[in-house]
Length: 306
Image (tube, rainbow, N blue to C red; front, top):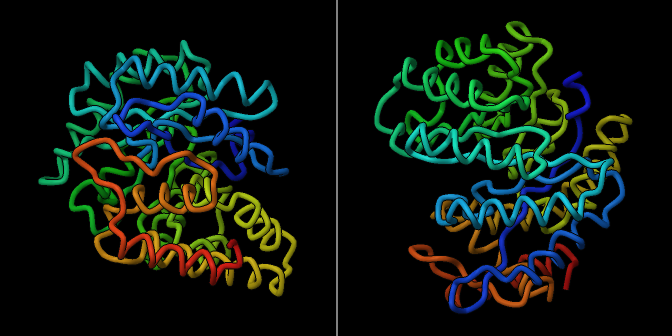
């Protein structure tokens, strides 16, 4: 049954007014634009690109409800759950279920970055599973994110939990991705593996996987779908053409230090293309500086989007 989750999901942003309130009209336009792409399997909302940790529970509900209405019955909605408190994570997960999500993506709380605590990770996920009935997706964080990136032993333990349907594999390093891919395939072959390092989609797609959940697909969904289709069909010439368009964008948005500015850069690109009204970020994050904006404008031009 979990094969139904295969495919490309765009991890979308949340447009905001200049006063940092959500622009729901802009959100609807953003989601409709992304969803106009043939071959897109669905959306990931309330993820890191969706500024999850800055939204209230009510705002997260509203984002999910807007997305569900626009998706229709054929496409899938994966909702991120990101909270430091397990009780809050359970409440948010239940809200996402009530709002029509098809699966939950559980992000490790940021406080876990300081230590590898397998029992804590198991408790967090186990309680969310008990509080809901939806399929669960794990999030394997970047190798540069401290202990947010699960160790082999912790990952093995999590894979044994009930209703684990997939893993958003964002190790952000090709060798680690391959090691995790092989490990998950051997330990839990039913779990869908979604390579999600925006800078490494070509190489990770070639190594194997079942789709992707990436925010670059909120900017150029048609190119990500084309890359995946080309790899599936063994058309390397087409795959390299798609990669050539993605390369300047992913290097500018994700590959330029500091990487924590990726969402702000993504919003700036969408604004420069006229797809969202403002590039406003919710504090404490800030919008792009004039220098960053110029860098992104150059990348968009190189990619042939301007």
